[in-house]
Length: 365
Image (cartoon, rainbow, N blue to C red):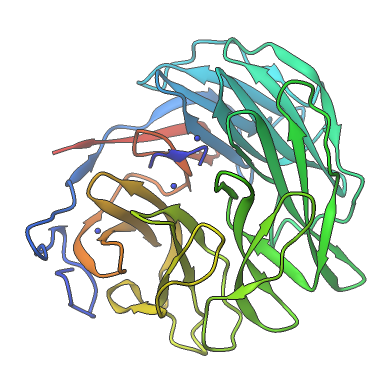
């Protein structure tokens, strides 16, 4: 599923869940039906419990992954069919790491990962050459359950966000990394009682993200640059909601998050302006509910906002307008489920199993 880095379809109104194939459209706007292609094996080996990330670069895919033998973070680039174009390079330079993430910007990749209790970051050229030096956060105690390192780019700088847990106390941290030098300024700025965040978006002057505040039990929007801004609450019910996704809308942004079963187990939608202030009331996107579902990816397309929900062996694709109304939907059953790409021009994800690392692509019917 193409979403930047990440440089992310029941008949409409049917709360019982989607039917196979294309659902009934609303207002003549339809989701483009997809079918799963045969997966491409990118690397062999026992990749069970190994993490990977993928992004589309306009010509092919960049993939970062945990090596199953050495334990270090590797990177390689493939063509549009998933066939490797470069030899795997150790981004972590032979040192073990976990939970990689990557973004493509300015003909290079920015790759983040967890090292011990810290976040690390390195730039890599499109041919796999390591650029600059490795950045390591001054804050340690990363909680990979709530938020492993996530990286985004505005074309010149990178924003790295990650959650810290020390003695059961949560905080959300960020570092802004200069895209030409790899140095961070400011470095590891923290906001307390908060963890989990959507991949940041650059609004032209600041970074914007959607977070979960554990003390207030709220989903909140925050901007950051030199420091964290005050928050804007997005949800209206207290509950252990996920921070979800933040995607561009026709005007401003759209925030999507999932409330737990103790609330309504729905996926929620709310429009924001460029500063993160709500411009609409929260929408309970009822057709995207169910105890088996989890919000996996969201991105802006020419037709609207597309949301993917994982439901075991299937994915539900939903097309929303800028008010959160479901326009159309589709259920697809790919051979395997995996880590959906957060951004890009393609619908793609990578998954790992006992035989290797695989790239799962889709094509329009």
